[in-house]
Structures are given as structure tokens and as C-alpha cells.
Image 1: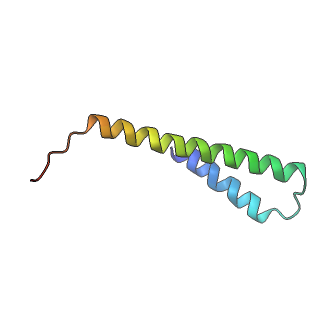
Image 2: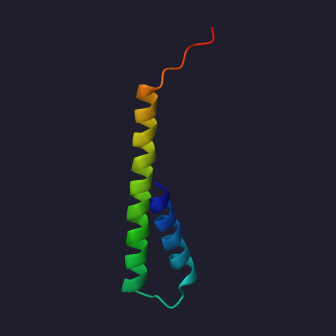
Length: 61
């Protein structure tokens, strides 16, 4: 999880700071960053559903 988040943030930083990269290089960085962002989001949702299934929380009422 931390590795995918780090790659996503590094991709976003590269995308924002590389003014030289135009055209295909910029699109490759954008595709990698977007793909990792989607993977990170899927991981978060799956982990939430998994934890929700195994953790039992009693009602206070």
C-alpha cells in the first residue's frame, strides 16, 4: 500500500515539475500515475470491505 502510494505521489510530482517533458513522455508519466492511483483506490476499497467483514462491532444500544 505504501509503495503504490509513493509511486503515485512520485508520478504526480514528476508530472507537475517536468516542464521539459512534452508529448509522449508526459503521457507515459500520466498513464503510470493514473494506473497506480486506480490500483491504490481498489486496494483501499477491498481492504475496507475485508475489514468490515471480519471485524464485529457491538451495538451500544
